[in-house]
Length: 85
Length: 198
Image 1 (tube, each protein chain N blue to C red):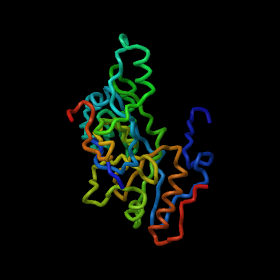
Image 2 (cartoon, rainbow over the protein chains, first blue to last red):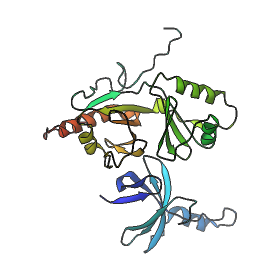
Image 3 (tube, each protein chain N blue to C red):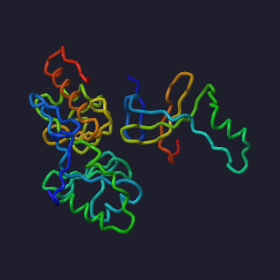
Image 4 (cartoon, one colour):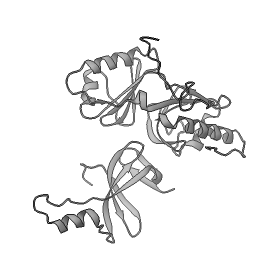
């Protein structure tokens, strides 16, 4: 059983979580060109290395951030939004 | 009958789980869905409850108040459970409805959730088949709340005097009963039992 450490509920079976993809900066709504919006909406970065992702603990509906190495699938740390990692 | 509200619960004669039979052997499941409870959540709910002179527990803990078990499910998410006459919860609901200021919003836990109590000699053995958490007395405290999976369903789990109380999506009541019934048989040594959801 793979465990993920929820900042609110503690270590739980990964089965209790849902991934919401990498944390990304939205384009500037006033300045961004159509191509930039299209890229933001429809293309995933899919880079090697460490990414920060949104995750949700489903039974408590708690959203938090996780640093994960997408090559090794190691979860480096998890933290609540608003708290410093 | 005029003026009388007849609520339909899952195990009522015309309810969604009408044909289900609650286990009554070594594991006893009691349906408490009709008992009073009141949930509020969202900005303002903590401040409103504090204004009612309730002391708020930390997240995922229970505060025992006069007549009410107050479960904190998030920073602004609460469930008040009434074990007695229902008067304490009724008073809380009346005060909340009379409030004109910020008060959070009603989370309809008495409509949306079933409430089942698991007890009996096989409750620990059955729960170990239904939930992945360590629920041994030293590990899962009297005032702890676990928001986790029980019987494959998202659930809120707390201890009760006799065993455990589980709150879960009311539409899944028949599924919950079938799953718990199978777990109780397996815990009782019937190795041929399988969950049957057809």
